[in-house]
Image (tube, rainbow, N blue to C red; front, top):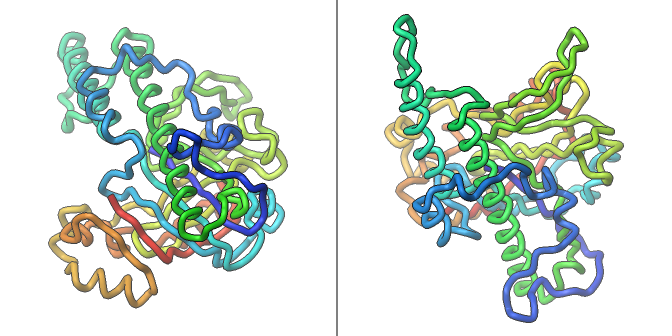
Length: 351
C-alpha cells in the first residue's frame, strides 16, 4: 500500500496528459518523486502465483475498498513554508489530490499464498517447547530461508504493482482535470509531490544506538518511511527539507503532509505514522454507526462523497478512527516527523 499527493495550481508548460494512442500518460519526472524511484529492487515475478497475477490483471488503475480513497483536498494550514514551497504547495486554499491505494488483489493473494507457505515451514521446523501461535497471520520464517527470500521477491513485485497502480490513477486524475477545466495538466501544475509506501518490509542500512551499523529488515505496518534531510535515498528536490511523509485522514477528516527527521532515524528506523489508526473495528463500526448519520455528518462538513456501496460507509467513518491531529502532534512531539501542511477534503471517492 502507499499514498501520493498531486497539487494543482496555475503554472506549467502546455502539454496534454493523453498519449497519442489515447491512453493516460505517466510523466517521466514522477519517478524521481517516488520512493525507490517507483521500482523496488529484488522484485521477482516468478515468486508471484498465477492466481495473484490473474487477480491483479483487471485491477490496475483502481482504488479498491476499505480505507482506500482518492480525495480532492484544500490546503488549510501551512506549518513549514520552506518545506511546503519545495513540494510546490504555496498557498492556503490550493487544491491537492491525494490517493491511497496499494497492490489490490495481487498483493492480497501474495499474502494469502505465503501465509500458507510460512505456516507449513513453521510446522516442519517447530520446536516441541514452542507455544502455538494464537493467530495464523503471525506465521514467520527466517529471512534467509528459501521461503523467506521467495516471499520478499513476491512482496517487492507486489509493491511495484502498487507503484504502477497509483501512477495509472494519477494519470487518470490529470486527464479528468484536463477534461473538466479545459486546461492541460501541466498548465495546472499537477506534479507529483511524493509516492510513499506503507505496510511493507524493506531491507535498509541503519545505525544502532551504540554506533554499530546494521542491515535490517524494517517492517512498517501502520507506519511509513520518514527519512531526514540529506539522506541519499530521498529525491534531490527534498534533500534540504527531508522526505515528504503523507498521512492520510479517514473519510471526511483532515490529512497531513509531514517531513522526516534525524530523530526518526535514531529512534524508529526512519519511520513515523501513516494514518490515525482505528479505534473501532470495521465490524463494531458497522454495528454502532448509522449510515444515514455518517452521510449527514459528511454533508455538514461540506464533503461530497462518491462510493460504490453506501451500505459500507459506516466502517470507514471518521468516528471509527483516532483523532488525526492528536496522532500527528504526538509524532511531532516525539521528534519522528515535522508538520508541514494540513489539508481538508472536499470530495471523497471510495472504491
